[in-house]
Image (cartoon, rainbow, N blue to C red; front, side, top):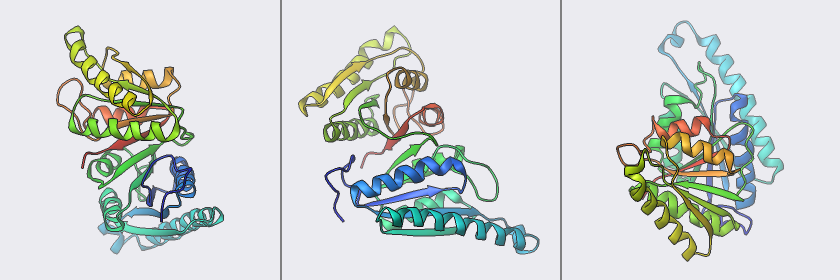
Length: 280
């Protein structure tokens, strides 16, 4: 399949929605179907039931109920996708490692982007939260978009966070491409802890802005002071940002974007969708 003219992000031939069966996956489901419709994408929907060895002797009835509820949930998503005219395949796993099952499916199907919800519930149908979400983003072979339940992904204002690292550079390139495709206003942000980091932060943000201007993208470079995840969320909220773009990893030190710290905190706090990009 090829991307259609209305596709907001290039090269999305295959998309995978990872759902945990809760209302917290609704944003991912809604936006995933919207993406697939706009981009003429093949759509996969994956759900993983976290199993336990105890089920083999004591929990078969519980497991069977989980499977039945998951099947109803997946069928409802496929019906929504079918109504949107999409080719949709549902995949239900029973696994002791939810994140790995999602990553394996994305790798096997060669998907271009995984879309996940931001929060979920902990239990037998393991949710995409905390360690699971972090592992999906860290190990995924493609970019990952994290969508809060109520978020509507738009592209009028995009914020890209950069610290000059390899993955941050990939995020900058992705953000510029999306902004150019959608006529967006781009904010290039590099955080600084104190005045001693001002020059370096300015260099990172200005370099990203210069790249954007070369592509004809309207852009501003900012270097707010504070912890990276705090200033990213604050700037995004205060400026009405529609999408935050970040790298999977970054430099060690104050401006790091390492899963389990800054990136995960931004994902957990931002009111808009966050697109996490890795370098090739």
